[in-house]
Length: 395
Image 1: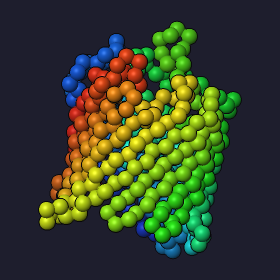
Image 2 (image 1 turned 45 degrees about the vertical axis):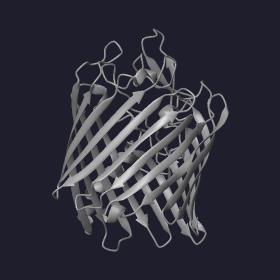
Image 3 (image 1 turned 180 degrees about the vertical axis):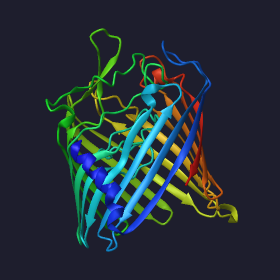
């Protein structure tokens, strides 16, 4: 933590040394409407729930272009669930780069992966699950990273000295299991707890129409298991030590994108493999318009047993479509459904985005669950269908 605070101080004071400074940010209002009453005792039964998100980006680069700093504080306040309110640093780092290397120290957000429905290989950053159930939002991860660029590819090594615990909604929040998660009392496989030093390595390159990524991770799992506390009144997250090897591939051919992500993991009770793969086919300028329409199809497989962290993507087919109007307002729509071919559960997701003027941005989300029966993975979410409207003002 002391090292991270030092990096934050450097990020704030960097503009004093000259160079180019860029400051921008946004304030976003979020309104969620649930059309079912909650299932579990203690959950807030208000149909309309709101929150406010604010973020500011401070970026600096020196005159020579060889050094840069970034500071991105993230604030979220929720009107109903105190556990969903959050103060985080998505980025707070200093970096120096040359012709064929980059060294970064501080907190950063790193994304790995190519598929649409599940990101199996994306393991560096912790998931901000209290933000949304899709798992796309991430917490800033303290790290020291070194990236080397060579003719034979790019290789990045990461030292991750401090573990970020996953965020969860509180007892009165939606999207929680029958027993609330007590995130204040996590359990660790390692005696070092959150101070365990994790390591990650990634190699990426392209060969013709193929983009290739190979990754390895050793350390604290970002996915917790759960055990009941002594009074059986709450669930405690358990973070195990794991080793994971991953591969992500993308093949681009005309209007086709073929995608694959696969992992092999040595987990809590077993070694298992998981994969997601499929394609995206884009039809450009449909009916002589500027609009593009994409068709997505992916299959999700996961071989973990019931002792490992829960996953919904174990034997599912994802079908979706992507619409890009390519207009001045950057209007896009992504709609899809993931269907479990074994249990019949389904998850519907619709996301629509549009910019208004120079500074306003609106997003509509619709998410719903269907077909789950008692004992199924998503049964506890069966009453959490919702529609959400986000309105952001950028400055």
